[in-house]
Image (cartoon, rainbow, N blue to C red; front, side, top):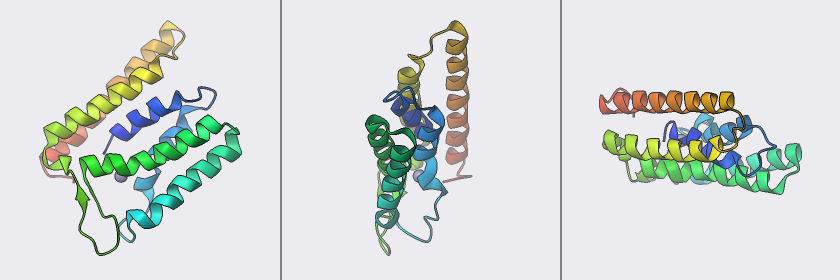
Length: 158
Ligand SMILES: [Zn+2]
């Protein structure tokens, strides 16, 4: 999953609006920043999920935020399973639904994820100016996802 991870982060942030959105974004994309080529999901997934939960618990002292951040980090693997393939354990072939092989289907799924997360997130926008900002964020995310989908369709990235 590409930009859909950010949609999941926006939606997850509504679990505790006292917590800024940035940590949810980090939890949602952190698994992509790790050296997956050298490892596999089963080895690093617990580290990512428990690490995210430990940081959240220490910083916010909010059970809701802690659980949500852990679930958000775990959701990364489910999302990647749906849109791409994941190497579950070393020496194993990638498993998944491989939506990247059908870029339009990937675009639809990821855009729906973005819009759903954005819709939850934007309900907290109290002023017209904040609502305009949330609309701009939605537009940027959808344009970014469209760009990724075009690159996938042209087989420039996978
Ligand atoms: Zn990923």
